[in-house]
Structures are given as structure tokens and as C-alpha cells.
Length: 412
Image (cartoon, rainbow, N blue to C red):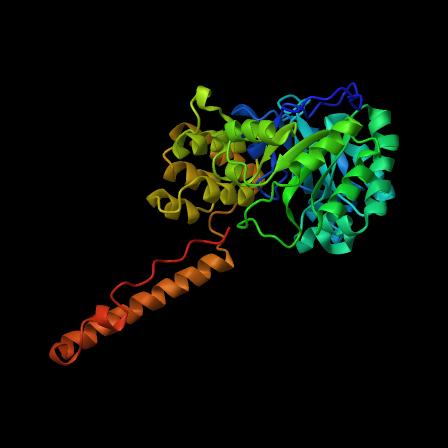
């Protein structure tokens, strides 16, 4: 780990990123059950998924006694046209005030100092830090100048961070940080990091890819020493992100490149136990991780669609149970498929509270059923024709029909 004589003071309710291996902010894979599982297996800190400032503004904060969580909810924009009896609030953000205490970083999507401050104030009392997303290249993030688009407006990004430091960080005594990507040239990256480090932030995470690069492209680590040195000069903690597979590798890379810690993304999505060191036993079997995930998802009554998506990441695609789980329409069904018998009763209760209807077919399921029936009918007709004129026709396998495609997995 890097050492430094100068350090930006860590606020009383904040946290020092130095020496930490943390869960990256990820859409869908950064929801509460995933964060709690990462903490259970050894993550030092967890980032929630990017939450756009305007989606938080106007939310109502409530303690949920059933899940022991703090929920931020709001009515949908069309609620004024609905009868009060059918108005249903949308859950925007959920956190666990005890299990995540002192370890949760709220990542905000923003393009405005004013709205960033307004949104951050709503959650500042319940988190250890506010992190500005200036690295996500996806259109849902860059729209309106947020995410990686902020890299092209460094003065605006610096003004957002400075406003958050003064009006949120100092007031609520928590840290403000930023997550960026590499720019087109080393010189531009250096200038950006120097500018951001002077805003009063306590931490900076660099995703070692440029904005156009995709996850399959190798992370670029050659600039890390330069970035880490600038952060050290300003007393700002520096984390690295990109192609980090487990906690041991994160600690080794931090030592090799002089940064203060590491952030894990894709590997944690596939197996949350990547935060266990080899001394602690390393990666656990997927069945054990899936069981723990289901237990956690039920405890906090996670959205069924999100749970189903995460199961598709945690379960090997070739496993027989993967196909069965993909066809499930409720917590009860998936608990029975996975033979989690001690969770079935709780699953039924959660299904009822969440209003999950097992009989309601999605468009994807109907399409898959239709395709399957059509395929079966085609094979049946071919079989009849072959029995009528068996000698004159070549085997089905020679005409590309012998290996019919499997029924497609259900869309999550």
C-alpha cells in the first residue's frame, strides 16, 4: 500500500479509503442484497448503484420495520391521474442502517452542483460518503451530461465536488469522492486529477479504461503510478478499478502500483466470495453463495426481478438448475427448485407482500412457449412425413433438425 505524509482529514462520520478492497458501484448488481453479501465475505466498503440526483429529490424517507431497512420512496410521475387507492410508491433506494453502518458509499449521478447537493443531503445522515459518478460510459448515465460525460467538462465536475464538500461533506461530516476514467492522453488525465484533488475530496477511484473501451478490453494500468503520486501529494486516497479478480490480487496490485486500495466489479457479480483471501479459503462453491444470497434477498424483500437477474450471474449457465431457475416466476418457486426448503414459507410471505403473481406470464415467457410449441410441431410433422416416405428422405440431423435448439432462457 502507498504511504503518504499529507492527508486530507477524514471527517468524523466518514471513512478512509486507504487499505480497503471495496465493491464497485454497479447497476442491478449493487442493490442491497449484493452489498450485504459482499460485506459478509470481506469487502471493506460497498458502493451502491449510481442513483440520479433528480430521482432522489422528492423522495420520502421511512424506516421499514419488516426489513429493518431505511427506504427512500416516491410516487410515480403519473400518480396525480390515479385514484389514491391505487397509487403505489416506487422504491428508489434502500439501505441497511446497522449492517451497512460506516461502510456504505452513496454514488450519485449528476450534472449540476445544485441538484447534487439537494439529493445528497437526503441520504447524508445514513452513509459514510458521497461519490460522484464521472466514469460510467453508458447512455443512461451520460445523458444530460452525467457519468463519463463529466470528463469532458472538468470545470463543471470540479464545481460539483467543491459544492458537495462544502455543503454536504463539512455539514454532515462525511467524505466526498469521485470515480473517473482515463482520458485520451496522459497529459489530460494528469491535469484532470490535479484539478479534482484540489476540491477537498477525500478519495478518488480511477477505472483503468478510457470512455470508449469496453469491459472485454484489457485495463490500462500504466498511468496508475502517476495518478497515485498526484493523489499522494494532495493527501487524497486513490483506489484502482478494472480487471481486479479478488481481494488478494487487489492488495498485490495496490502494492505494485502505489495506490491505496482496489475496487472489484465483475468478479463480485459472478461470486461475492471473491472478497475472501486465500488464507480465509478463497472462493466458495456457487451453491453456497447462491443459498446465502437467497437468504439475504428474502430478509430485505428485494425486488424479485433484481433477485432473478443476480441469480443468473451467480449460477453457472451450464448448470441444470440454471434453466429451471430461469423459468421461475416467484421466490417460492425458485426456493423449491434450489431445494431451499427452510426458506419456502418465508418466500411465500415475501411473494405475497411484494404482490408477485406466479400466473402472470411475461411477454418473453409467452414468446418462448410459442417458439417451443412451434418447434415441437415442426418435429412432429417431420416425423410423420418420414414414416410415410422413410426411404426417400435423408436423416433429420443431416438437414439441421436433429439438434433442435433448447427453449430460450426466460428474460429477467
